[in-house]
Image (cartoon, rainbow, N blue to C red; front, side, top):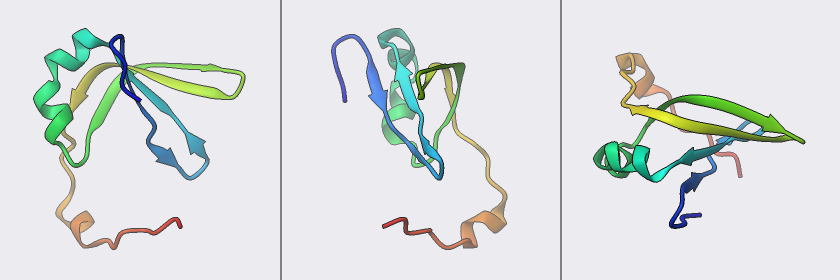
Length: 78
C-alpha cells in the first residue's frame, strides 16, 4: 500500500507479518536503494499493539551475505 503520507510494506515471516513504515523523508533519502535492492535491511523502531507489529524505518541498508547463502534454495510457502 502506498499513500501520499507513507509507504507501507508487509514482508512475510513464518509467524506472521511485520509492517515496515517508510515516512516520505526516509524514503526520499534511501529511494534508490529502496527501489533497486533485492534484499533490504531496515533499522528502526518496533511498535506493537493488539497483535499488529510495525517497524518504523529510520535507516535502510544493503546486507552483506556470506557466499554460502547464495547456494541455499528458495523456500516455497504456498
